[in-house]
Image (cartoon, rainbow, N blue to C red; front, side, top):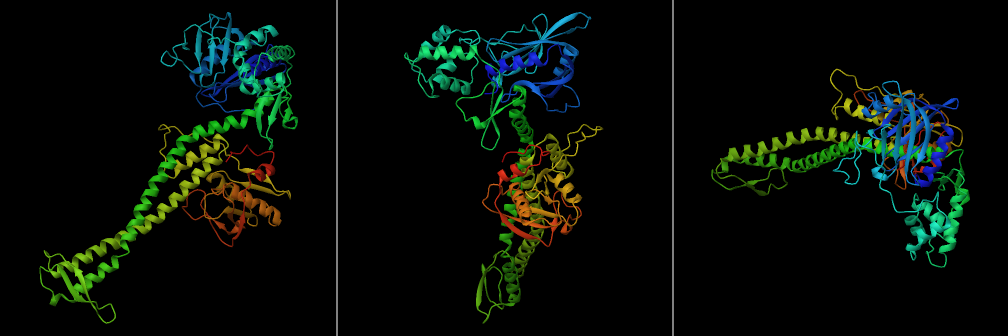
Length: 586
């Protein structure tokens, strides 16, 4: 349901209570379409997140702390200028629409008291955050909307702010039973939830189904003349007694599925979690979802680069293999040259073939060897020798190139797998910087400027059922760091002959159960994560070595044993330590 008009109305009430008379202390623009305003209110600091992301647009208080870019965007600078130290006057919803206005009062450039409005419009891909001055004109917005983009409404600095076009729907906050009756009557014959959503403002499809269940006892009932009065009466009663009781709906694994400002009656009560605030529920619902989406967006260019490089190397490998196939007959060329040379005394110039005894075969049978009539027999022999030497040199060169090419293919496949394991922007940055260091990616840092320093990211942390710590790397930098810091007698695991994470068991004598669970984690965080069975090698850390000059993440090891295990994402979720970051969904 996040974030329909009804949920937005509940959020407005929550913000008015939590931020009353608060002052803006800090403004951050953490993403192109995301702001965080820190307000001093009621004896503490509260972080207010506003996002106009096409898929995750929302507004709520958040406990998450996010880093700002080194250079603040222009929109952020304007917000700091206009809202810095401004007092929060309140949040106002436009009817039951998904438009919320935050009113602030502060001093302008001349020191006079002036009001500013920060308006968030939650409308899918048309979502926006707009700063409006006291004169009603737009100061700036997160997303500029020109006449080329929309013929209905432009959103540009200097233009008067106009609200989005109103829909001809019933406002549930002010409607009576008679109003609901009038709004729904033209929709007789439709499925009830569809009729409610079309006739009443501010409702998501999920809420419309819930209201249909409450009004008629079924989510799939039809709207008829017989049940219309009862439906209208129950809708009026529902909105007249709408109490805020923030609820998080979860799946069987506890993952958030939905957020509402009241409990569902049409869903299993065991799958609903009461939350202290709507903002708390929003944080739980959006934190991992939004971060994963943004990581995927930032990883898109890297993924495309790696896939292109991989395709190029695979084509090169196919050519190299064909060269080796062609070279399989090179000894036959040398043999033909030898046989012609041994019979030069009996061969005449201008012949198209040489019929000579095969001294290499038992009984020396005669064989026919094609010759170029324009060349002498000796020159024909030299031609065969030259072809032999050319193929031999090519095969010797290709063998070395193939080894390098296959190693690079394995490296690129590993990096593609690492991209899927990234759960933070720092981990993504580590992969980018590594590709620059190994020479695969061009450094775009301006000359004379140091690349941004990325804080050391942390590997996954798990605790086995026996209480033993298990750490799993999420990229090559983490893998090298994790393996390098492990003690010699601790156990090291890795999926056999495929890209995957380094896994360290922090014990010199783990139980069979702990070792098995570590192997399942190694399989889960590998390219074989979707396979039924994955071979996983394990050995003590002291038998794992990194060759000099090897690429990040590459090691060799001995004294290994192999377990065949099934990947288990649910086991990973169950063993996850409290300090572990949210993991990527495979």
